[in-house]
Image (cartoon, rainbow, N blue to C red; front, side, top):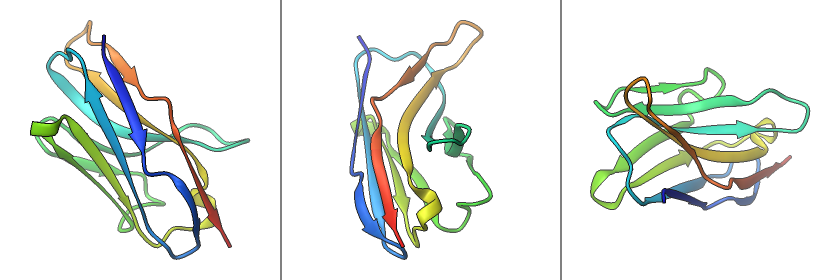
Length: 118
């Protein structure tokens, strides 16, 4: 059974930093993409950062230059370093891993709350 566990969320003042961690366990097939998705009240779900298995990264424009996604393959862990946080970054952040292939599965963590005060 695949399990993704996020940690690192919390309350921070605007301009501060947080690092989110997602530890994956269980049997995951070939990975297509790993990413962080956030959901804020009254807003649509956003894929804020992603990294393909080959290493290519992509960021939502509002976080470009402030957030950095990275991974440690040996530890089956992905990270999201968030700097210069803004109140509009407040959301629940979910880790997501998508397997490669037409029948690839999508796995989700339980989410971690990030709250940025002004």
